[in-house]
Each structure stands twice: as structure tokens, then as C-alpha cells.
Image (cartoon, rainbow, N blue to C red; front, top):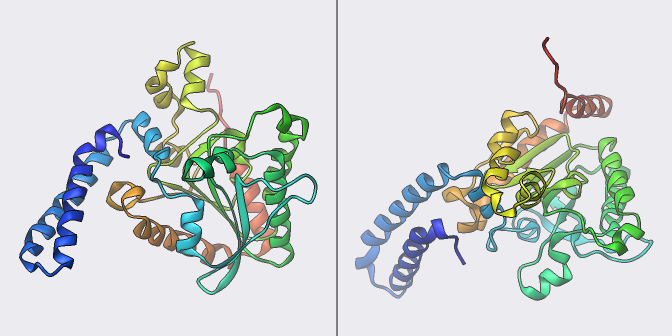
Length: 317
């Protein structure tokens, strides 16, 4: 599946894949055409994704073929061992977390997971965590602190699950505890918005020393549809809402909410998972090298100052 504005690129990709099959079967005459088509694809994709509107970037952030947390875990980390359950109620599959090795060093990894197939989406609750998901994450955060492992979080959720059962089990309290735990964690922390960063459900994993954001990801207090319904009383005003919310990676970088925008291969991650993971891995490595050299007390002070600055404004009379 591809979005409407990607139709031409999808047709080019189909031609490239057909020629690659022919080339693999020994027909070397197509090599020149293959090189030319790949060059054309790269040029067109880079040009296309540079001029997207905020609403089009929202569509890309929700793209069904966009890489998820499990994809990045497989491509970036080694020997990932997943932990399950919150020791209170159950195991929430909308949150995946555990321990792994990043470039030979142990780290803790936590992230939202939406699932790919219909069955997986149902099991993962479309990436919308319940309280037990956040409590599982808190358990992993505290273990990371205990064993002095850096923490890496992947943010990709439309928001925390708003159901009655979740509220009865303390959804808001679980999110608040997750935010508080991350804020004062005595280890280096890196958060990456890889798709949707929606509301408090995303912020629960976002109070980090360094916040990265994929080029076509979004990060906002509310979805464009919710914003349009509240401000205009009309959900069809999503384009206007997307622009007003300032939810793109460049908007958030300009406002100082995030630290780095991670470029995506060919302009969008879903075209090449491996290159996307390779680029992201370099950013994570650079951040961890910097953060691991900072004393713990200084790290906590700088993290506190970082978030105290957000939302501060002055009125000139």
C-alpha cells in the first residue's frame, strides 16, 4: 500500500524490482537501465518528500509499511531479551521492552508497538498502551538504573488507551509515574519518535536527555482529527489542524522540543528499513558517547533544565 502522492514512486519501484529479478537471472544487459531507474527514483523521492504539507507528513507517520519498534530492535540491537508483565495485572503487548546489546554494550530498550497484521494490531491494541504497559516500562527503567545501563525508548503511539478498564486501573497515574521515573533516572536516556507521538501516551517515554525524531514522524498533544473536532467542530479540517499544531520534526526542532531530526533514506523510511536503521544507529551511538561521558549529577541537572525551558514565555508590555 502506498499513499496517493507516492503513486509515481511506487510505479518506479515496481519497475526496479522487475529489472533486479531479470539481472539476478543473468541478463546483464539491463544493468544500465537499472542504474538509471534507481537514480531517477532517488531524485524524485528526495524532491517529493521535501515539499510535503504537515497533513501529508501525518499520513507518512501512520504509513502501514513504516518501520516499527520491533523492526528497529531487530536491525539495531543484538541478543534482545524481552521482559513481560507489570507484576500487578498482566502483560500489555502494546509496549515492548527488555535488554539488548548496542555495539557491544548492554542497554535497556522500551517502545510502543502497533503490530503489522490485523491479528498483531488487535494483540498490540494498535500501539495504545494500558496502565500495565507503562508499569512494565517503569520496571525496566528501574532495572536499567540498578544495573547502570543506558535507556533507549521508541515512541510510536496515537495515545494511551482511553477505555474504562484502563481508567479504572489508573491510566493517568501510570503515565505520570513513567514521566517522573524517566525524569530522575540516573542513567543516560535517549528517546526517538519513529512514527506517531501522541499525547501523554508518548510523553511517558519522552523525558530523555536527548530526543531524536525521524524526519516524517509527528509529535503532538492531540491528533489532527481531535484538534479539528474541538476547534472547528469539524473533523474534515485536519489539514488546517495539522498546520496549526506545529507537529512536524522541523517545527519541533525550531521550537527546541527535540534535539535532532533523523534523516530518512529516499525521503521516507518505508522504502528501506536497513538504511533507516543504519542512520538511526549512528545518531544513537553519537548521543550515547556524549551522554556516557557526563557525570550522573550533571546529567540530572541538565535534563531538568532542558524540560524546565519548554513552554516558558514572556509577555512584553
